[in-house]
Length: 284
Ligand code: C2E
Ligand code: MG
Ligand code: MG
Ligand code: MG
Image (cartoon, rainbow, N blue to C red; front, side):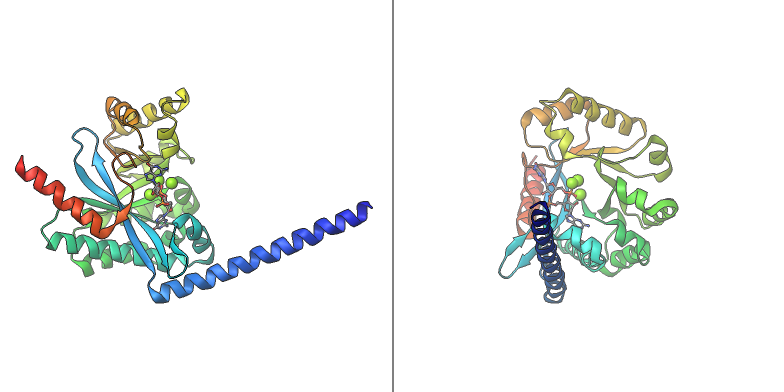
């Protein structure tokens, strides 16, 4: 009887594994098609200055506009694209498109501020990422400091000894560097000193728990204080409540993004926001 049960379990796992492998293969093929058909689009989430409330830039977030599935979240396909290596091509598209869009907005007389893109360790590790960035900047005729590259602590660790050189070469293009989801990984103080980034982005899990969890308040406080002491910008992500923004303001956090002000939106909508915020400022 036990043997039979074991057999069934094996059969179940077997089918489950086959199903998953098949689904993975399908998704991988669909990503290849998506690249060919140019189905990736960028959404922009506004970034605001905490003290003044002013719009100071955006984070560009990729979405997959699938003809049948609709808008697919990056959480659904970035992890697989990282495994298969397709992230290199997707990421290159993201960087080019962000730069093209910055140029287009600037030509319209708009002031897009700093636009951040997310970069996976796989993209950094393969090819010549700093040279690629430089070509994107030059081809689109934008200033390097208009772009910000977001890396996670784990990407930095994954690159090992090459990290310091890579980060220096990126900064030489004028592009700013931010550590994304800060606090969830393994950065040590000595790392931060060695890597010389411009900004720390406090992970939204800490922002989220500001009200309910004293530990999160402590972490947010410490990150802001540390950022200030090291001359780094500190940005909070995932701000959803006024009370969270109040706390961040009190602690001296520089900038924030979150549903409280705006969710990621299509380029046309962000463009309207840029126009509105500029006419507001010129009025007074
Ligand atoms: P991330 O870089 O940490 O981006 C922030 C995520 O938080 C975004 O999810 C954004 O929509 C979401 N978010 C913003 N404000 C709020 C809020 O107030 N509440 C909540 N609950 N969520 C908020 P999204 O767009 O689904 O992206 C998920 C992740 O996918 C990103 O996390 C990033 O790691 C990755 N990703 C997105 N675009 C790219 C890309 O172009 N390249 C790479 N390599 N990864 C990307
Ligand atoms: Mg990010
Ligand atoms: Mg983040
Ligand atoms: Mg995140």
